[in-house]
Length: 294
Picture 1: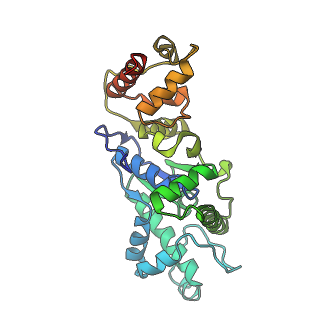
Picture 2: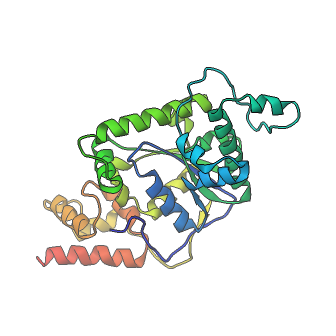
Picture 3: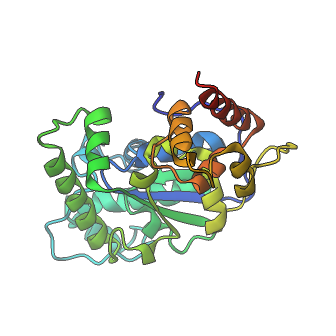
């Protein structure tokens, strides 16, 4: 399975909407963010934000990488939102600890990027930086430990024996960084427009269409290509044998496996996966094939 799905249909943002994604390590933040950006045809920033901040600030990019989402050791500095360093503030900036300078540079870069148009930004307190900006949707991704371990080992080459420690350390760093600069609690559902448990779906089981539908529910204004596609409904699943029958659960498991979808995908999310005539045909073909014992 490719890391990022390649699909021909592209959706478009009706408004100048920016999507920010906070994430636990191994929950698929980069995967989901990239997938959304490709589907919407808008820029994507994860590590790319470091390059942009370095370019705008003149600070070496390697310094940004060394301080990337790392907690501060200083007890001082309460950032004034939107502060521009000039005039009397110049000497204050010069005396500021390096990690604060790095955050300020990223702060300015995030605002500058958001001002240019719709985009997806992963991490770096972007939801906090843009909290007062209209048309900003904040998302937080989480997952149970086993799911995060599997992704960390599979995609990042983490030693399976050290994966849990690596994940806990990374999440502790991200939480400390966010809690300090955002003066809020990292991962608190009350701080985000939308929280998604990717462990229940499996990251690769979350199609871009599912996320777009969820984003619409969260308030994003998104439009897709106009087609005559008629989506399946829960009532359509019973005649297919996918619900309401003695062997429905077994049939569903076979269909999910044939479609390369997570085995614990619910019928509701399966319906959300069927977003085109092509996918409807794939589902129907899988059902027919299994029923015929092929």
